[in-house]
Image (cartoon, rainbow, N blue to C red; front, side, top):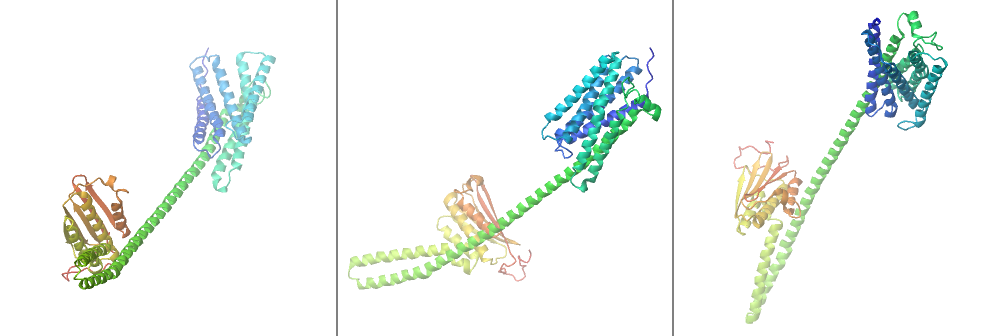
Length: 511
């Protein structure tokens, strides 16, 4: 038995035919696996399945032709496998169409699935009935079953698919997505013509296959009907690819828009945080100023009123002593009262200077630090004060902040560090003032000791520095010592420097 000639033109047609539908299946599957915009995933999966199975069916046709060309006979089950692939593919196409035309809002509508099963049952009944009415060989029965599959499933399935795509195109909300509508209409046109081509089946002895078949079409047109089907498969695939590209572009634009909205929201949050931080610093600034104003008021009252009362008390006690100089017991009591009055005066004097040292208002930060260092030495701590750069008067609030930070830092050194020496450096630098307090005491771990309630003093120093736009740094190591550094920027409204040499430049102007 001679092997049939292999028609390479048909191999190319079937290859393109299968490749087009397989590519369509991949395209639709990729769309279904994303957040689908072309249609819901439950709708797209049957269409993707049709593309994979029908493309495999056409490639199986190539394999069978090549086997015959090499002289191999087809196993009895191979034609039936090909038929099963054909039936399953068109059943999937019908299911896709019903899911679009009769949406039920479920993953797989039970009524649509029952409709497909009923159509498959009708097809099997027709195959069995024709086999019983016109008994013949298995090969003839297989050809009849193939023709009935195209009449009962392919023609309505492809036609319904065209209607489904037209309906999807009509649901496109705006004219801005005109390319999506064009793509869906191209795919619909492809399926409509593809439905008509399924009428041309293999010649068999059933109506209308006796007259409308692939052989008659080849004799009339001069090219096989499979070429038209392949062209329609390409048209369907191109249309669906164009549609998925449009929705992918929409998806990317939505993503970019969401990202832009997120960035705008983050920028708005950043601006709000910056405004809150500025408001917090301004509130701190006003709080520090209010505290110092209240300290000054109390200091003035103590100095002006209480000190006067104590002075008057001292005079009265002295007068009373002269009157009672002969009563030794009374004189002794008056001397004790006078001594107590002197101690009260000294206490009030220290309190006044602690509340608001006069040097700070009259002579500035350098003199106030000098007074603070001298006062600290009385507690047994040896403090060295170094002034660097050109001395100048600062903004009153800045001077107050620097003085209070130095005061709190030296108090901490005296109480907690165990050191007997400390160094205070006040450096007048271009554009900023730097205050550093260093000791060689026990040190501590900043992360563990700088949070309330243990670190109220450190928190207060930091907030005071931030209230004037400065920065606060702590460098501490257990067993080695602690360095507290404060940097306060100079504003354009700072007072002029106190220059010993008139030719030296103004550090504020250097900014």
